[in-house]
Image (cartoon, rainbow, N blue to C red):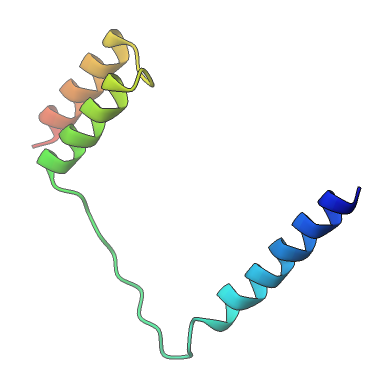
Length: 67
């Protein structure tokens, strides 16, 4: 129980810190990954076993067909 309170307290404190970090004049930057970056990320996910070969090939085909 004490551990849960400690974790909850740390979470609340970190949220306060994150909220205060924005400044007031922060700028939102939109980033779009290149086709190559998407393919690299997809391959990493496949190599780590997060995708089946079928899913990998389908998503790879979808990425390449967009261009």
